[in-house]
Structures are given as structure tokens and as C-alpha cells.
Image (cartoon, rainbow, N blue to C red; front, side, top):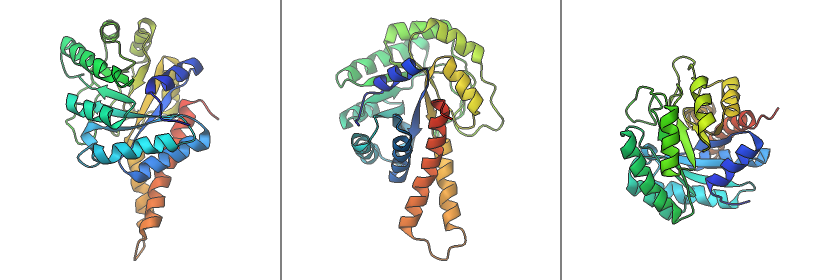
Length: 279
């Protein structure tokens, strides 16, 4: 189909009362596995990479690969910078052709976050790109970053933030956290419901790894239109690679590559079916 702005996928998700899956990637096999799952289920997805991952997966290498895969795909795919921490990184992603960018100013005071996102909004508009931001603090850590305590999003602040910035998507904190949960999280669906009632902007759930299918679908019914999956895909790739190499005297790179792609394919396929309410 095509490389598309993330906003188009969010609008379609809203119309169909589902969520679009946003799958983090770090190498060629992850890109291939995610796209294969999306094509098999004939469902658009978002390919994304977070700024903290760039020391292992450089943007100048990953970006063109992600964009090429989207352009060649049989389904619509948006390419997104997740958790951009510096304006320069956001600009680099836009220059490379990313169709969506996130600036994460969630640790800034509200007014500073608003002003930074306004700047990113102007930058993205010149490229026709979608803008995501975060309000409240999603717990855990993205990659090897510093862990943060969860701070649930204030519904009134969310409305002010969206009205002031004009963001296309808002990541909310409702008890979710990045990484693997030590115990099943207690998501604040009451907070999500309050936000959804007063905010028209599509809402995003980060920290999807470890949340149950029932919880995902309840969140979708309360306005979540984009769900991020990262750790689950990295873990699935690693398990498949380990299983392939186990008891081998000599591993074959090409077989290993296929095993890694298969691990991501299986994880992405499972989550797409949950987010789209497929049987």
C-alpha cells in the first residue's frame, strides 16, 4: 500500500473503534517480522523506534530501512519516532522521512511541555507529519533509561494540553509502565474514562508488554487508539534465537535471521488480533 502519516491510521482506528499497533524495531529482522504479520492480517501498523535505542540501532541506518519497508508493504504503515528527547533528534527523523514524531516532555513542568510540543508541531507541519506527546509519567524505563515513578495524567491538564498544542495523539499515564511488569498492573480505567470524555484527541497507551488481552480491549473501548509494544517483541526475538541456537555445534546465520524474524512476527500478529478485536 503506502507509507502514510500516523494520523490517517488513528482516524481509521477511531472510526472502527479499534487500536492500531505501534511496534518498536531494532534491526532488519524485527522490521521484516512486523511487516509480515501486518500483511498476513491485512492490517495497517506503525513501525517505531525510541531515541534511547539509537545507540544500538542508529537512526540513519534504521530510518531508511523502516521507510523502505513501509513503502513496499501491502498494507499502510506509518513510521514513527517514539519518545524523542531532543529537538535535534525529532528534526533528524523528519528529514529522513518519518511520517510521525513524538516529543516526550512528560518530565517537564506543564507549561514547558506545552511550549516544547508547540515547537515540534511547527516543525512537523512543514513535513505533513503527525505529532504525539505525553502527559503524566508512564512508569518504568524505555530501554536503558532511568526508571520513573508513575504519575497518572490529570484529565483537566490533558484537555488544556491538547487545546494548546494541537497534538494528533496523546500518550496518557494510567498505571502503565515500560518494560516487563513485576506484577500485573492495576490500570486506572476511571482516569482513562475521565480523559476520554473531555479530550477529542486520540489517546495512546505505552508500556503494553504484560497487559492482559482483556485490559487492552477495555482500554480501546475507552478511547485508546494506539498501543505501543516494544519489550514483548524484543523478548520474543531473543527466545526464538536462543531456541534455534540451543544444542547446535554451529549456527547458520540465515537460519538464525529467520528465527529472529519469526519471533517478532508471532508477537506482532498476536497483538494485532487483540487490538483489532479479531477472533
